[in-house]
Image (tube, helix red, strand yellow):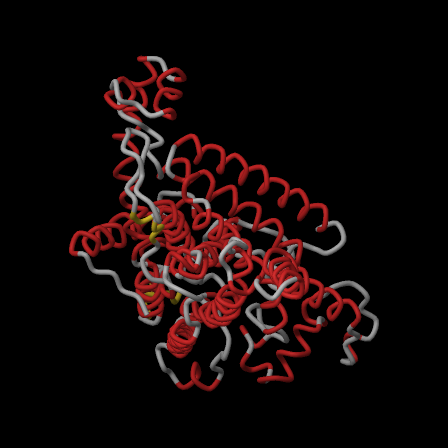
Length: 493
């Protein structure tokens, strides 16, 4: 095996990210009543483009970062070593966040009043079985990728955790939280649980508080208390007072659970280990709360004015989370390896702002045509936009929309089959990395030779790595994504 292949094998697990569409059906927002016709209205039952586009944006980032040649890549495109935050560290939190949003959108029956789907509440058993099946399949796919290409040295040190494995656990917990507690978000009138009086009202309030805030607070508090009250008995950690990954509770649990040889790079802790998953739940929970808002307040997402108001609120909340995370980072360092609470807060803020921007760009005709703005039958939002935009702005807007449409369609196409592209990119990179090639007197692989010889010979090495990743993205993954969507092929578990 080449040195490059060994390096790729060591790094491929932490730079990988998970894909929520793999565990959720088509993300559709169903409306209970017809929508009034008008230039600013949207279909009464349609797929929310912002979910697919957000997922597609993170898929693009994942493929771009995952296709870097680690030996020559810019440090900002690789995961932070120890504590810190890089662009690469935003990918996995982004997919956890999008996965959380997809949960209530795909299981919206739990947020509909009883009158909308018959007497009583929807039965939980079919959903529990479906959730368990998807979590198991996702975990199995993660184990398959950890074992690939099934060489003895890989199988002997097989990791039992990883990115997809963590996604499976987080999906299972957050989905069960949702189907168990979503009833507390329903209107009181007509709900049989309220007929028994105050005891059930107290239960409703407690359940709602747990769903909307208690769950992440308990998870994060458990991590903080356990981490900072733990004293590692290893001799080399006797005098360590600060939070050090190799002397943390995470390291002690991972090493004593499956052995250091099964940790990532045979280190004392695994970046997708058990303890850090507690805090990773918060990233998915944040998306869950926004997804419930999308389902419960469909009217706000039917008009561009409502989208702008919702997006503005999300941007403010996201910026507040980033500020709170940076402040907390003065006490608890920001780091993906241990998935610290400060890291969770900062990434929740960034992904929230990112979704708000995508929501503005892709849903409810943000760029209306000049005809819709000047037609006589405009809705209230249309009249507002007509007053807001001058005729010259309309022309610019129309041009902007034509220029953005191909990019938007590509992002949506990638967001429709994220699990497929995750698995495909891992298999392509790993396979090419195991094909040894010797050039310029050193050992390399079929994966790195194109960047290190074909591009780095006339470009700065970090730029050569970025161009190499872009070529793979634009010439291989994007055409394949458009082809799959044009054929109507959606690959999910």
